[in-house]
Length: 145
Picture: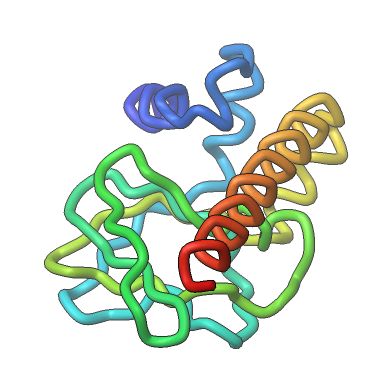
């Protein structure tokens, strides 16, 4: 459990949590390994598994079939799925053997009810991500016009 708590502490989203909160949060995570070529989430599909933290290996992120990012140890994806069971906005695929910590929507929901301050922090983080994405799209639109 101590190793898991240390890994979660490295995730910017959880960096401000207390030791007690990190331990409580860690109980909802499962360690998973994925083979090369496995898509953990697919754009446009629903998924019960919400949030992923990469602990080893590399993954690619693609939107509409175009690679837009690479992720490695310490990176995470699927934050939106912790708040709402919506379709995925991107496909994330293991480039090689990939190790992740994974938390399902319903496990996070239980934790969030007991820790509303964490939910608020997550919402602030998500607003930041959405703002960055909106700015990126606006920049791209300006460059193509």
